Image (cartoon, rainbow, N blue to C red; front, side):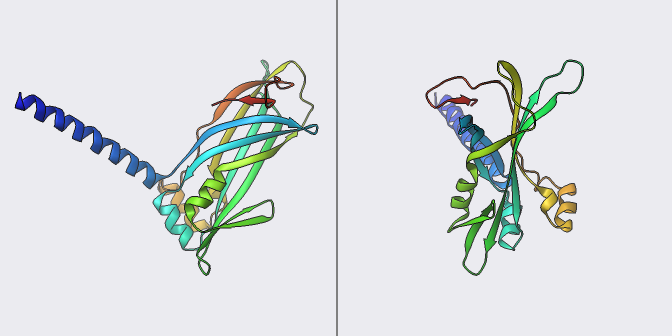
Length: 202
């Protein structure tokens, strides 16, 4: 009886320690998880709203506090499938947002479309970074009605904007490898009429 209770307690402790180790490892590496998004048609333009959970690796946080600016890219591609050749890109949205730390004011700053916004903590800045509404989708060719397209959405840290020493470090370590998984789904235009005229994938 006592042995069974002891084994049960050991199993519980093992599960708790495993969960703690996993969460600590995830926090040390950083992550980007796209939580939700939807397409919206407004004033003859097409937009996408994106909500993501973003955290930095320990190495990124240290570099940020030392004055290294980090740039994140959110990109949506809308592709037209072609059975005889590679799929054709017919529309895209690409947004680049800079994240920096101001040592004098001890505040974090986001720079987007020439506009900056300051935050007292990194947590606040990352929450704002993960909330990206009304990203304009530019059409290369008109999107045809009743035609199925493939949409691909991804967010990543743009290591090409880092200084050369950090780009070389990226080649040798995973500490600078920060990217969401690609979200891929099929969309047909015009968008299906729903309450918010939106097309969701979660």
